Image (cartoon, rainbow, N blue to C red; front, side, top):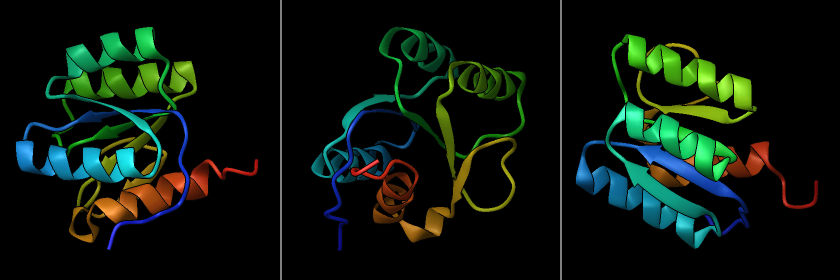
Length: 117
């Protein structure tokens, strides 16, 4: 059951699996976020600078130079980095187990960015 909590701001999803990207995009959009989906780290970094999102949701990736660069850029810009993965996937602000689904991602963001704050 999708979360119905209000969520504002922009979220960039980095996900190369189309079905997972669609589920995440739908859940976040229904919660009120503006959502952009990418499948590449380079494109995501470019979007981070142009869109100034509240959060970047990162697909499980190995600790590559690109992922570490993205994490550093997110920290520099004050963007919350979320790993939607099982296990340790490198530096992040929020970790949501992939097995918990899209509504858990929404709930984690709502907890991080309460509407009344």
